[in-house]
Amino acid sequence: MLYVGFEPPLDCPLSNAQPASPEVALAQLSDGSSWAAVLHHGARSRQALDWMMRVRHHPASAGAVLLAMVDDAQGPLALQALRAGADVVLPAGAPLPLLQAQLARLRERVAPPALGWLHILPGHSLHAQARELRGPRGTQRLQPQLFRLLWVLCEHPGRVVDAASLRVALDIPARADAQALHTAVGKLRRVLREHALAGHLQTVHASGYRWVPEPVEPPARGDSNI
Image 1 (cartoon, rainbow, N blue to C red):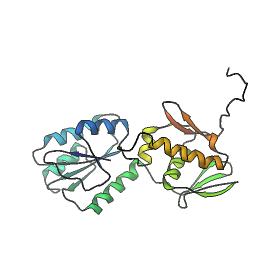
Image 2 (image 1 turned 60 degrees about the vertical axis):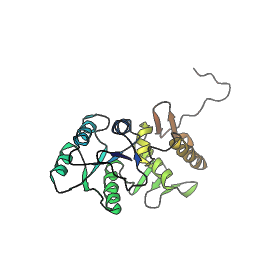
Image 3 (image 1 turned 60 degrees about the horizontal axis):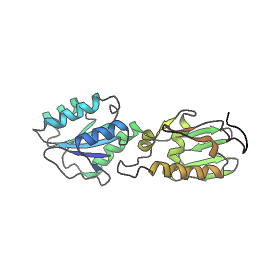
Image 4 (image 1 turned 90 degrees about the vertical axis):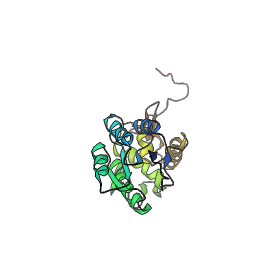
């Protein structure tokens, strides 16, 4: 999540928000490394309105979440912000719980929560409420991030999920190390190995990851790679 400060700048109450200039924020919303931006602008700041319209007109960032904080949430500037592309407008200095609640609601639109059961292979399933992987080798409760990663990959078997989409789904901060996603995938592979499922999680070079119903076995030693 990004905090984009316009004239006059204010401190962002969100501890997990990364300050970013308008150009850097647009780039990160476009490449998928961030899913949301919080911004504040005063009554004379046309720059913020123009920036929101740039975000909405950019094909790769059109679905990003924008939350605008204005000095008068009932005044004409609030309406202008909504017309420019803001999803929500709050008064500057809004209580932190209100800000967090609004972002949580908007996040569900970007990354819908896991619900119910998901059958991933014959005899194997995921249970959302319990965050469990269940199969012939037993039931295992997964860490929230690993469960979310496995769920997102298994929702559309065979489809490559790019790294940017997975970072958003896992709520990996933009400021986090670039290896954060790879670390999560490595941990998930270790869990899957205990259930003889590691071969179903494939890395697609320079594209992302996918879950496949039929794993591709590596060639036996000495076989040719024709």
